[in-house]
Image 1: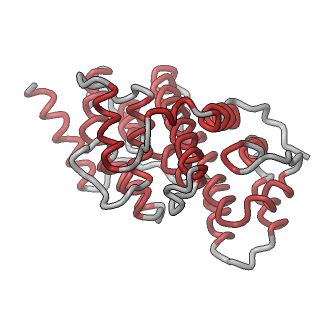
Image 2 (image 1 turned 180 degrees about the horizontal axis):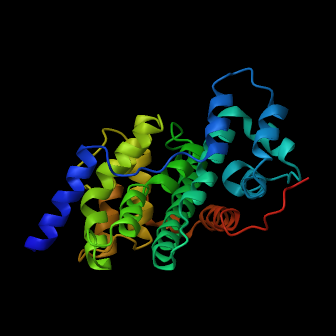
Length: 288
């Protein structure tokens, strides 16, 4: 325990001194977000920027065709996908999909951790967007958007990345996976906050990264944070000794979850499966 405390103190010192390497926003996502600041940005120009990344192009078209984003009539080109989504949704979805680029390492043991964290984020996103689709069908929580929720889900673990980088650079600081896991649990939320603030992400997303696992922190109204938490709990990614039904009752009392029957709705399964398929590994060729 004393050794663990000493190691954590060293990591905290690095955070306070700004000497811990933080991930940077993927270049294509940065360019898309910059272009979308101009409300008059031509959609064809935005599509040309996205097409520089074939994998991003393919996934963005898949998401535009998914149940979560009204894909009743399929589009077969990026230009049509961007036209359907518009500037705001394209900005958030491009940022969300580009996150996968950060969860990669040449070192196999680090990559295994990153891939596990990414798959957890995909599961949370699939579940959360399916819940939101059901709520929207019932006229509930219309102030929450699917595109922002997707981005929130895919960055909620972002604070682990600086610690995984540190694991590679300074093995003595995090000598084994037990120490790494403990560091992610204790320091990941603060690092996630720092990373997203550095990227100028909105407070609603910073809140998700910072307070996701802090059940004592509650927003006054139903928020993206609530849906990320609900998805993580329902997917059993945040295990506790408390029965699942008891945990879900907390979300019912707040009004996040009108009924447990929601998880059996056709809309839930359709949206869950389509989002998960959209975020699955895709061929890297661009869509014409």
